[in-house]
Structures are given as structure tokens and as C-alpha cells.
Image (cartoon, rainbow, N blue to C red; front, side):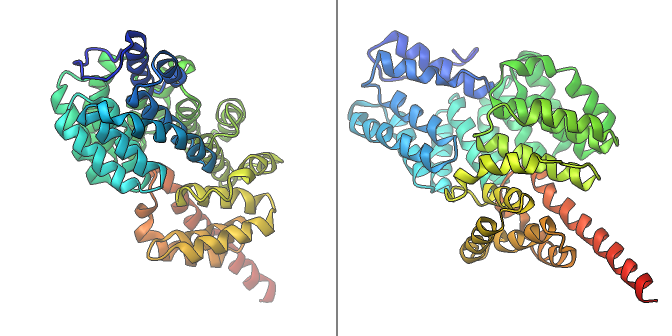
Length: 406
């Protein structure tokens, strides 16, 4: 059960299924590692349309083509059972249906409508924020999260959702206050609020305070899903890098960021972006790119998210998988339309292959539109880092050539 949340009607014939659905919501909101409890709801009541839809949503969070395939029969069952479901449940089923075919904007519109009508539905707000973040809808994140936060003014998971939205929108002070309010209520089970405060300290360039804050909370991450566990350790490693403690950051990569669930896309992009930054700080990656590329390769044709594809592309190019990297590069360029994905793809391949001038030109041209690809500001900062690294290395190369031919 989500703590202190008012009851919202759920259509089921089983109390055990109802309890499992509530536990599923609690796991997602607290980024726990037992979201699979939703399968218990199905076992107790396979005719529960909402349980079928939430099971589909869990598969979709894998952000893979296989996840979509696994979600399909659950969605079909949810739709067949929806005749006797409530209006809210039917709206959620429809939203997850759009998600399953890649229409995230339609999904977020429907989930926002659910939240507006049922402001205590924190799970719909959480799913909505996940997808709003994935396509860079910062205003939408603030609108949706503000509704649930206003309905639950004492804090808790709603405050953590709103805090993160505000931080991404540049409202650092308000985000900090709300995140601490959330942690007062759930000090050990709101890693999303902890994660928000990591963003706050990074935005202020207060590396020492940020590192100390995360160190004080690491013991609470053992209950987390692999994404949240590796992502908060990713933040800790970035603070270490900013404090010129590269050896410690590399240990965090090896011990906490890479190796929890190597087949999961979120773990992969945490590892890719951290290893790229480690290299830009002069740290030898050794054979680590090969290991990452081995696990990325099976997902390279999924084409679920341009944000993910750009990370996959960099790992493939750094590991020397030139044929598959070039194929992905061309596809991203061809499909980019008005988005900056194609330019960024050219730029990061240039960076991966040491073509500094080409990398700087391409990433520089995409710079003003990078927000369109989704992800948090700190995740997208990877491309800024690559731009400045390319400019610096190109200048060094030019000076070396001048000295050579002087």
C-alpha cells in the first residue's frame, strides 16, 4: 500500500490482487526492486484489467522491442476486460496502449488527464513523469507533478516528483525545499528525492556537499531497482570526478554502476555516460568498452528512443564495432527530421574516433536543441562535455601541427 494515499476504486474480485496492485505502486514510486509483485495480482485475479495493464507497463519500462512484445498480450487482455473497468482504469489502459506503440506524447496527455481528475493517483503521475522526461517536456512535468503535490501538501512521494520537475525547470531553491520535505517523510525509501538533491548540488557546483549528501544515503539504495541503484551511484561518481578523484570514480563504475543488470538499458546508459566522462578526465577505460558493447549490441535495432540510441552508438564506436556503428549512425541521420539526433550522432562518432574538429562542428550545431532528445540536464551534459573536449583536443592538435611545421 502506498503510505497515506486515499483509496481509489480498483475493479477486482480479489483482496490479494488489490493489495498486490498497491504494493506495485509503492515499489514504482520508491524505485524498489520488487515491482514484479504485479504478477501476484494477475495470479490472484487474471480478470483484473488494471493488473493486466500495469503488467504491460512494467514490460514497457524495459525500453526494448522485446518489452513491447511481452506487453502486447497483457494489453490485449486489458482491453478485452475493460468493459467492466472504471473510467480511470480505461483511461490508464488507453494511455499504456499508446506507450506500447511508441506514442509517448499521447500517453502523457492521457495520464495527465487521469491525474487532473484523480489527483491522488501518484502512480499515474509517476508514469507520466517518466515519459515526459524521455521527450523533454519540462513544462508538462511541472504541471502534472504540481497537481499531485497540491493534493498531498504534507509531502511524501508527490513532493519528490514535483521537486525533480522543478529542478529540471531551473527552480533550484523550491526543488531543494520540496525534496527535503519528501525525505522527512520517507528518509529511506525516496531515492528519487535524494536524486533530486544530487541535481540541486550539481546545479550549484557544490561538489563537496553533493558528494557528502549521497555518501550519507548509500545504505538505503540496496533496496532499489538496478536503475535507481546505479543512477545514484552514477551521480556519486560524477561528484568524485569534479573533485579530481578519478580513481574513486572508476571504482564506483566497476563496483556499483556497471554489473548490476548489464542487459537493462538504463544501467547501460549510466555506464556509457560515466565511462565516457572518465576517459575525458584522462582515465584509461581498458577493455570496459568491449564489455558494454557486447551487452548493447542485441538492442541496437530496437529504435525505441533516440536518447538511448545515441548512447548505444557511442559505445559501439568506442569499442571499434565500426560496421554496426556506421549503420546506426546513418539510420539516426536519416530519421532525425528536425530533431538534433542526426547531428549529435555525427558528433559523438567523431568524438569516439578522435575526429575532434568534426565532432565539435556537429555537436555545436545541435547544441541549442539538445533538450529535444529527452533525459535530464545532467545526462544531456555529456554532449556538452564532448563538445568542449573536442574543442580542446582540436586546439591541441592544431598547436602541435603548427610546432611541427614551424
